[in-house]
View 1: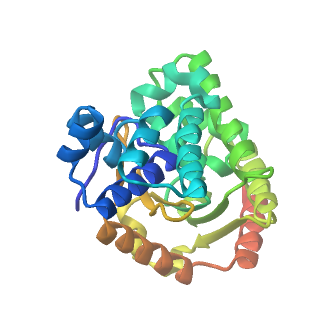
View 2 (view 1 turned 45 degrees about the vertical axis):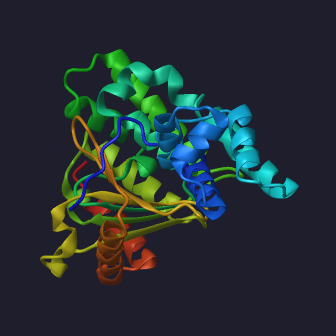
Length: 293
């Protein structure tokens, strides 16, 4: 499996910009060396722009478009809009929490999630972050990150709540399809009261038109999801999807076609084997009633 590691993955806008600029250069028949000589910009810098590893400026992009003989006004405007959008996303709402996000590269995931139009999330042990209640999130973060102070835990809880508001509500909400293993329901996080509140929240969230929640029952036995949790992020065309795998220190994302197809096939198998949304809601309600007081 090919793992591509970067400290902060580029925004969806930068990925689109990189693809468009590379396609225009290739269509012009110019090599990077030739472009570098014509506009007097370091070839290495141009290469990193074309791979999305670095951003750029409207001035440099105009020079590149002139070099590629791009005269279509609408096309030029579209590409320059991508430059501006990428710049804007470098000032995200989560920047004020950078001290607790950066150590685990969680800010990198937030940058990707902010531009996604669809999220397919499989979780075998925990409720996905976008569906957690505040009390459940606080209990999870405090136990998984024992080195954090109470103030730092509070900051990460606030990030999680703002994520939910940003991605699941409002004009620019994303579609979330979550598949949870039944083990999630039986691992008591916080207390039975916290779990009952969490189950009620899952039922309520599943009623939103952009949220689908399914449960994999224990009766299914072994299944492809036993490898572990993952998120498939899809973006506006022409940007391709990514798979995000979270680790304690350095999470990674996969972008090769074979990796994307593999995880897409796994997710399709999981949701085909899971209880449908209505059955899932019934199971959640019944499990909540069975919890000890």
